[in-house]
Image (cartoon, rainbow, N blue to C red; front, side):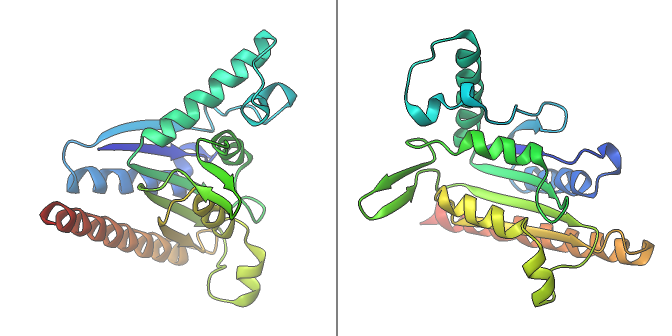
Length: 214
Protein backbone atom coordinates (compact mmCIF):
# COMPACT_ATOMS: atom_id res chain seq x y z
CA UNK A 1 0.00 0.00 0.00
CA UNK A 2 1.27 3.46 -0.97
CA UNK A 3 0.43 6.49 1.22
CA UNK A 4 1.14 10.05 0.13
CA UNK A 5 1.48 12.49 3.05
CA UNK A 6 0.92 16.09 1.92
CA UNK A 7 1.39 19.16 4.13
CA UNK A 8 0.77 22.75 3.10
CA UNK A 9 0.88 24.84 6.31
CA UNK A 10 3.55 27.54 6.32
CA UNK A 11 3.90 27.68 10.13
CA UNK A 12 6.28 24.76 10.62
CA UNK A 13 6.21 22.90 13.93
CA UNK A 14 3.55 25.29 15.25
CA UNK A 15 1.10 24.11 12.63
CA UNK A 16 -1.95 22.28 13.94
CA UNK A 17 -2.60 20.58 10.61
CA UNK A 18 0.99 19.29 10.44
CA UNK A 19 0.76 17.80 13.91
CA UNK A 20 -2.50 16.09 13.05
CA UNK A 21 -1.43 14.78 9.64
CA UNK A 22 1.60 13.22 11.35
CA UNK A 23 -0.71 11.51 13.83
CA UNK A 24 -3.00 10.40 11.02
CA UNK A 25 -0.15 8.83 9.07
CA UNK A 26 1.26 7.13 12.18
CA UNK A 27 -2.17 5.73 13.04
CA UNK A 28 -2.68 4.49 9.48
CA UNK A 29 0.71 2.78 9.35
CA UNK A 30 0.07 1.11 12.71
CA UNK A 31 -3.22 -0.27 11.39
CA UNK A 32 -1.77 -1.20 7.98
CA UNK A 33 1.75 -2.59 8.52
CA UNK A 34 3.95 -2.43 5.45
CA UNK A 35 2.46 0.82 4.17
CA UNK A 36 5.02 2.76 2.15
CA UNK A 37 4.92 6.50 2.91
CA UNK A 38 5.98 9.31 0.59
CA UNK A 39 6.13 12.86 1.93
CA UNK A 40 5.30 16.02 0.00
CA UNK A 41 5.85 19.30 1.86
CA UNK A 42 4.28 22.00 -0.26
CA UNK A 43 5.51 24.83 1.96
CA UNK A 44 9.13 23.72 1.55
CA UNK A 45 8.84 22.64 -2.09
CA UNK A 46 5.84 24.39 -3.60
CA UNK A 47 5.17 23.90 -7.31
CA UNK A 48 5.05 27.19 -9.21
CA UNK A 49 1.62 28.54 -9.97
CA UNK A 50 0.38 27.84 -13.48
CA UNK A 51 1.81 30.00 -16.21
CA UNK A 52 1.65 29.92 -20.00
CA UNK A 53 4.68 27.61 -19.98
CA UNK A 54 2.91 25.20 -17.61
CA UNK A 55 -0.18 24.61 -19.75
CA UNK A 56 1.26 21.84 -21.92
CA UNK A 57 -0.86 19.17 -20.23
CA UNK A 58 -3.98 21.15 -21.09
CA UNK A 59 -3.18 22.03 -24.69
CA UNK A 60 -1.63 18.68 -25.61
CA UNK A 61 1.11 20.51 -27.48
CA UNK A 62 4.70 19.30 -27.30
CA UNK A 63 7.09 21.46 -25.30
CA UNK A 64 8.90 23.95 -27.52
CA UNK A 65 11.24 25.48 -24.94
CA UNK A 66 13.32 24.31 -22.00
CA UNK A 67 11.00 26.16 -19.62
CA UNK A 68 8.01 24.28 -21.03
CA UNK A 69 9.83 20.95 -20.77
CA UNK A 70 10.63 21.61 -17.12
CA UNK A 71 7.05 22.60 -16.36
CA UNK A 72 5.68 19.50 -18.11
CA UNK A 73 8.10 17.26 -16.23
CA UNK A 74 7.04 18.75 -12.90
CA UNK A 75 3.33 18.33 -13.65
CA UNK A 76 3.90 14.75 -14.77
CA UNK A 77 5.88 13.89 -11.64
CA UNK A 78 3.19 15.29 -9.34
CA UNK A 79 0.22 13.66 -11.06
CA UNK A 80 2.03 10.31 -11.31
CA UNK A 81 2.86 10.42 -7.60
CA UNK A 82 -0.76 11.22 -6.75
CA UNK A 83 -2.22 8.51 -8.99
CA UNK A 84 0.17 5.89 -7.60
CA UNK A 85 -1.03 6.47 -4.03
CA UNK A 86 -3.68 4.22 -2.51
CA UNK A 87 -4.13 6.63 0.40
CA UNK A 88 -3.54 10.39 0.49
CA UNK A 89 -3.39 12.37 3.74
CA UNK A 90 -3.66 16.12 3.13
CA UNK A 91 -3.06 18.85 5.69
CA UNK A 92 -5.17 21.89 4.79
CA UNK A 93 -5.21 24.88 7.15
CA UNK A 94 -7.76 27.60 6.58
CA UNK A 95 -6.08 30.74 5.25
CA UNK A 96 -8.38 33.69 4.54
CA UNK A 97 -11.43 31.42 4.24
CA UNK A 98 -9.80 28.99 1.81
CA UNK A 99 -6.77 26.73 1.33
CA UNK A 100 -3.11 27.82 1.10
CA UNK A 101 -1.97 28.91 -2.35
CA UNK A 102 0.69 26.20 -2.24
CA UNK A 103 -2.01 23.53 -1.96
CA UNK A 104 -4.01 25.13 -4.77
CA UNK A 105 -0.92 25.15 -7.00
CA UNK A 106 -0.49 21.40 -6.39
CA UNK A 107 -4.14 20.69 -7.19
CA UNK A 108 -3.86 22.74 -10.39
CA UNK A 109 -1.03 20.41 -11.48
CA UNK A 110 -3.16 17.35 -10.72
CA UNK A 111 -6.19 18.55 -12.68
CA UNK A 112 -5.15 17.04 -15.99
CA UNK A 113 -7.59 15.93 -18.65
CA UNK A 114 -7.02 12.29 -19.46
CA UNK A 115 -5.21 11.66 -16.18
CA UNK A 116 -7.48 12.62 -13.28
CA UNK A 117 -10.66 13.37 -15.26
CA UNK A 118 -12.09 13.36 -18.76
CA UNK A 119 -15.04 14.98 -20.50
CA UNK A 120 -17.64 12.84 -22.24
CA UNK A 121 -20.89 13.56 -24.05
CA UNK A 122 -22.59 13.09 -20.68
CA UNK A 123 -20.25 15.40 -18.80
CA UNK A 124 -17.04 15.03 -16.79
CA UNK A 125 -15.90 11.66 -15.44
CA UNK A 126 -13.27 11.29 -12.71
CA UNK A 127 -10.35 8.96 -13.41
CA UNK A 128 -8.60 8.91 -10.01
CA UNK A 129 -11.08 6.81 -8.03
CA UNK A 130 -10.29 3.82 -5.87
CA UNK A 131 -8.20 5.68 -3.32
CA UNK A 132 -8.89 6.94 0.19
CA UNK A 133 -8.22 10.60 0.98
CA UNK A 134 -8.12 11.88 4.54
CA UNK A 135 -8.09 15.68 4.73
CA UNK A 136 -7.02 17.28 8.00
CA UNK A 137 -8.60 20.73 8.31
CA UNK A 138 -7.43 23.29 10.87
CA UNK A 139 -9.34 26.48 11.55
CA UNK A 140 -8.79 29.34 13.96
CA UNK A 141 -12.54 29.81 14.36
CA UNK A 142 -15.58 27.55 14.20
CA UNK A 143 -17.27 27.27 10.82
CA UNK A 144 -19.09 23.93 10.71
CA UNK A 145 -21.85 24.58 13.23
CA UNK A 146 -23.76 27.45 11.61
CA UNK A 147 -25.11 28.40 8.21
CA UNK A 148 -23.09 31.61 8.32
CA UNK A 149 -19.87 29.78 9.11
CA UNK A 150 -20.41 27.21 6.39
CA UNK A 151 -21.09 29.99 3.88
CA UNK A 152 -17.78 31.66 4.76
CA UNK A 153 -15.43 28.71 4.41
CA UNK A 154 -14.17 27.67 0.98
CA UNK A 155 -11.76 25.05 2.25
CA UNK A 156 -13.68 21.85 2.93
CA UNK A 157 -16.29 22.61 0.27
CA UNK A 158 -13.64 23.23 -2.38
CA UNK A 159 -11.64 20.10 -1.55
CA UNK A 160 -14.76 17.93 -1.47
CA UNK A 161 -15.71 19.26 -4.91
CA UNK A 162 -12.35 18.94 -6.63
CA UNK A 163 -11.57 15.49 -5.20
CA UNK A 164 -15.03 14.34 -6.24
CA UNK A 165 -14.38 15.75 -9.71
CA UNK A 166 -11.31 13.50 -9.83
CA UNK A 167 -13.60 10.54 -9.13
CA UNK A 168 -12.61 10.02 -5.50
CA UNK A 169 -15.63 8.98 -3.47
CA UNK A 170 -13.86 7.96 -0.25
CA UNK A 171 -12.98 11.40 1.14
CA UNK A 172 -12.85 11.73 4.93
CA UNK A 173 -12.45 14.98 6.85
CA UNK A 174 -10.79 15.58 10.20
CA UNK A 175 -11.71 18.99 11.62
CA UNK A 176 -9.76 20.93 14.25
CA UNK A 177 -11.81 24.08 14.77
CA UNK A 178 -11.43 26.98 17.16
CA UNK A 179 -7.69 26.55 17.63
CA UNK A 180 -7.22 30.32 17.96
CA UNK A 181 -10.00 30.75 20.53
CA UNK A 182 -7.98 30.03 23.67
CA UNK A 183 -6.16 27.10 25.25
CA UNK A 184 -9.29 25.23 26.28
CA UNK A 185 -10.83 25.48 22.82
CA UNK A 186 -7.56 24.39 21.20
CA UNK A 187 -7.27 21.37 23.49
CA UNK A 188 -10.85 20.41 22.68
CA UNK A 189 -10.15 20.81 18.95
CA UNK A 190 -7.19 18.42 19.22
CA UNK A 191 -9.22 15.89 21.19
CA UNK A 192 -12.05 15.98 18.66
CA UNK A 193 -9.67 15.68 15.73
CA UNK A 194 -7.79 12.76 17.28
CA UNK A 195 -11.07 10.96 17.88
CA UNK A 196 -12.01 11.47 14.23
CA UNK A 197 -8.61 10.17 13.11
CA UNK A 198 -9.03 6.98 15.12
CA UNK A 199 -12.54 6.49 13.76
CA UNK A 200 -11.52 7.00 10.12
CA UNK A 201 -8.51 4.67 10.35
CA UNK A 202 -10.50 1.97 12.16
CA UNK A 203 -13.32 2.16 9.62
CA UNK A 204 -10.88 1.90 6.72
CA UNK A 205 -9.13 -1.06 8.35
CA UNK A 206 -12.46 -2.85 8.82
CA UNK A 207 -13.44 -2.19 5.22
CA UNK A 208 -10.10 -3.58 4.06
CA UNK A 209 -10.65 -6.78 6.06
CA UNK A 210 -14.14 -7.19 4.62
CA UNK A 211 -12.79 -6.70 1.09
CA UNK A 212 -10.10 -9.32 1.65
CA UNK A 213 -12.65 -11.85 2.93
CA UNK A 214 -14.96 -11.15 -0.01
